Image 1 (cartoon, one colour):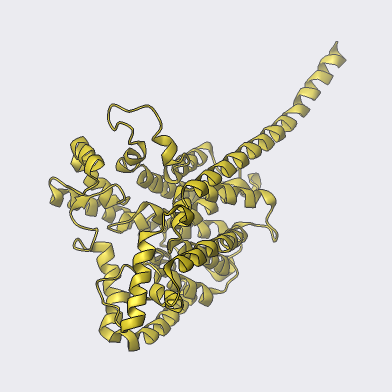
Image 2 (cartoon, one colour):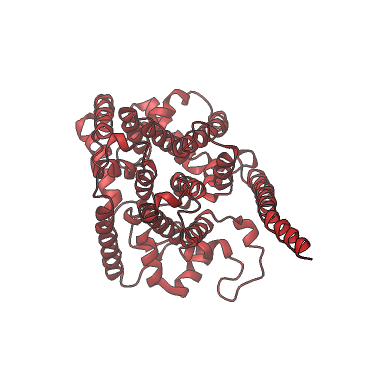
Length: 448
C-alpha cells in the first residue's frame, strides 16, 4: 500500500507539468483560431473592395493633386504635415482607385516587417522563439485600431512601422538612425513626437542629434516650397496648437465619441446621459455644460500626470546599459505612448495603433519573466488590452439584446463611456508597475 501510494503521488506530481503544457497548447490553439476568425471577419466586412474607401485618404490625395497642378498647398487647409503630401506626389498622375490599391496592399509587408523588428527589439535571444512571434501576432491581429487602420490604409500604419523600427535600431545602438526615424514618423502626423520627448527627457543626446539633423534637412527641403514662415507653422506652431489649443479644428468646446483623450473624457462626464442620447440619434457634436470648468479640470489632471511622468523619467541611462538592464529602459520609452492621449486635445480611435508597440513590448516582458511579475500586473495588462483593443467587433456587439440605456448602440456606448481611453490609462499603470517590480525583484529568484 505504501509503495502504491508513493507511486501514485509521484505520478500526480509528474502529471502537473504535463497538464500545464496541455493547457498552454490548448490556449494557443484557441487564441490562434479566434484570431483567424477575427481577422477574416474584419477583412471581409471592412475593405477597399466593398466601397468603403477612406475619406481622409481621398481628401489628402485630392489636395496633393491640387498641389501638383497649382503649386500651392494652402496652410491651415490640410490635415497632415507636408511630408505625407510629398509621399503622395509621385502618385498624383494615377487615378484614385489605383493609388488606393497600392497603399492598401503595401500595408501587409510593412506590418509583417514591423512585428519582426519589434519582437527582435524586445527578445533577450538572438533568434526570438515562435511563441514570441505568436504573442505579438495575436495582440496585433485582434487590435481594433490596427484593423481599422488596415481597412482604411491610414497613415498611422506607416507611423507604426517607423516606431517599431526605431525601437529596433535603438536596441542596436544606431542612435542617429533612431532619431531620424522618430522625426519621420512625427512629420507624417504629430503624435509619434511623444517618443522624441521621451528621448530628450532621458538625455539620449545621440538620438536627439539624429532628430535635430533630420529635422534641419527636412526644413531645408521645405523652405523653397513654403518659405520660412510656412515651415515654422508646420513644424513648430501647429504641434503646439494640437497639444494645447482650443480653437483647432475638431478641438472646439464640444464632445464626440471619437475624442478618446483625457479632455474628451472629462467633457463627456459633464454632458451626461441626455447628451449621450442626442449624440447617438443625431451624430452631431453636443455642447458641454460648464465647459470652462471641464477644461480646467482636464488641464489640472494633465499637469498632475505630467509632473508624475517627469519624476518617473528623471534618471538617465548609459549606452552600456542598453543590453542589461534593457527591460526597464524599454518600459520607460513605452510609457510615453499612452501619455500621448493624455496631453493631446483631440484624437480618433484608430490613432491607438500607436499604442500597439507598448502592448507588445509589455506582453513579451511579462512572458519572459513570469516569476518577476505578480498577478496584479498581468490582470491590469489584460484589462487594458481588452478595453483598448475592443477584442469583440463592434458589428457583433450591436447584435446583443437592447439595453435600457443605449438601446442597441453598444459600439457607440463603448466609445461614449471612454472605455478605450481608460484602457490607455491602465496600460500606463501596468508599465509603471512592471518597471517598479523589475527593480524590486530578487535577481536570484527570477528568469531575467
